[in-house]
Image 1 (cartoon, helix red, strand yellow):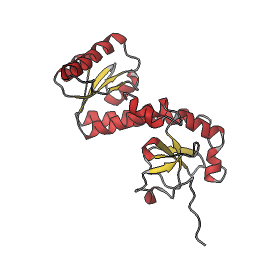
Image 2 (image 1 turned 120 degrees about the horizontal axis):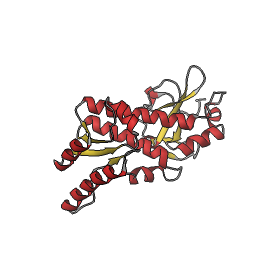
Image 3 (image 1 turned 45 degrees about the vertical axis):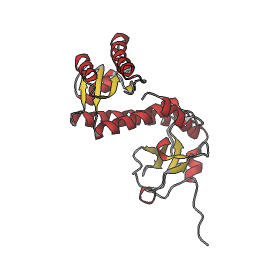
Image 4 (image 1 turned 135 degrees about the vertical axis):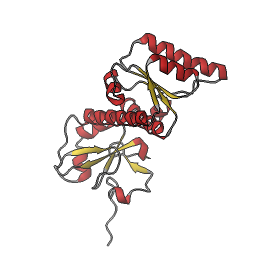
Length: 228
């Protein structure tokens, strides 16, 4: 008799390339894989996030929500899903957030190396006025005055076109994190220019926003409505 497939676990990254949906181990809902985070067991026996979905071994999927990951830890869902004793750090929800932030900063650094980022209030203002901006980036701890002035330019662009502003505004990174990504100090404002690396950065920002804002029932809605 053939073994029945396990609904909780995939069979590894090489066999799941064509999968577009998986079931959340917490909510038991089937979701697009972009709305989930894959977790695997490291050789040390510790459960770790596999954000790029490439780590070997069978994977268990949880909705991309801090609340969902915390609930999985609380309910011992990882031991149940992997059907063996595994080590789960109580800080896993926070650790996952930190990994998502690292993923965003790495993508921004790659965009900068590709010449798709300018920083500094004046350069950002010029990029906005020249209609070259794919996204506006503010440090989450930046001063309100500068943020307000640049956001006003975005709104004015939309008003001239008779439509809502189409430039996404990213405010998920601190000034220190922007400094690290761009290799300079005191970065408060930056403009993302169009290009492949920019798309990767925005996609990772969306995942981070989803993780911080979404709940089990509104994951996709929160991500779509955010201005990540």
